[in-house]
Each structure stands twice: as C-alpha cells, then as structure tokens.
Length: 208
Ligand code: C5P
Image 1 (tube, rainbow, N blue to C red):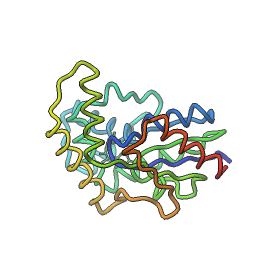
Image 2 (image 1 turned 135 degrees about the vertical axis):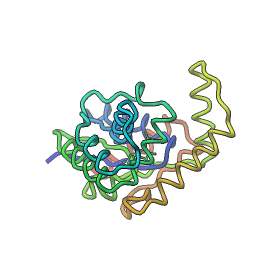
Image 3 (image 1 turned 30 degrees about the vertical axis):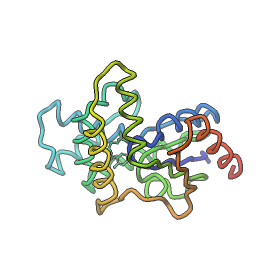
C-alpha cells in the first residue's frame, strides 16, 4: 500500500517548498491540492462562468486534470481569491477530494499538501504535519518573494490578505483548516526552510 504523508497549514506557511523537498527525499509523488482549487477557479474565470453556482463549479471541478498543474500559471491573486470562494462549496470539495484520494494511492508513496489532508482527504496517512508560522512572518515571506522576483508589493495589503484567507479557511463549515488530532505541529516562524525540512525528516523517519 502506498505510504501517504499529509501536510496541512495556512497560506504561505512554507508547505509547498517543504512538501517538494520531502517528496524528492523519499522518491514520492507530490500533489499541491491548492492547485486543484485554483485550476477550477481559473477555468470558471476564463469561461466567464459564475463563481457562486455550485452545480457549475462542481462540473468544472470534475474536469480538472491533476497531471500538469502548474503554480506559475495559477498564482494570480484573483485566482487565489476565487479558489478560496469556491472551496467553501461541499460539491466542489467532494469532486476534488475524490481525485486527490485517487492520487494519494500512487506507489511507492505520496506527499499531499493542503488544508484538509490529515483531517478529511487522507485521515489514515502514515505521517501528518501541520505547518504554521505567524501571520506577520507569512506576510513577510510572501512580500520578500514578490520583491525578489522583481515585482513591487505592499506589505500591509499582503498582511490583510493573509488574515482574510485564514479567516475564510478556518471559518468554513465544510472541512475547515485545523490540525488533525494526530498531527505533528511544526511552527516555522523562526526556522529556515532547511531547518524545517530537517525537523520534518526526523518526524517522518521516526514514523515510517
Ligand atoms: O494553497 P493555496 O493558497 O494555493 O490554495 C488556494 C485556496 O484553495 C485556499 O485559500 C483554500 O481556500 C483552498 N484549499 C482548500 N483545501 C485544500 C487546499 C486549498 O480549501 N486542501
């Protein structure tokens, strides 16, 4: 049976980089489940379909191909906003969770990262990590990323955005963001990505 590593946490906590490094280390397949919500949102926006029609959004979610999802074409701010809006719809979540579960069964193992992997998508995962950092640190990292990429950014606007996204993700009724009871908490506020990876590796090695 495929081994599953579940990684959850709020936006910009460092889950993405950490998950990719872990998948590489163990030779596992990786799925960033946020991209499945983003790809659904982008398909709706591109087709100028409404974002508040659950049936239309579900149908679009069922057409999303997991192979070849690419964050660089899904990173736009309005796609993230639309993704977090459609992510409150139970029918959309059911459709995407089915596809995510099918992915999680790939041999020899998988790393899935998102908001509800340890609680809903893969409750039997071999290892569960809940990766967080303070909203200030997460906003700062996002700001630095944009500036390093040559863009211009407004720290206060990013900070407000991080807080708004947290509220939406933690406050929704279906699959709210929270640590699974058996998740290991990893607060990366004062850790480099390398230190976070080493900490995660120790937890994973101890559990496998
Ligand atoms: O991780 P990312 O910020 O790209 O995800 C976009 C949105 O998709 C999140 O704000 C969240 O609302 C939603 N999402 C979710 N469940 C997941 C992954 C992402 O609800 N497992």
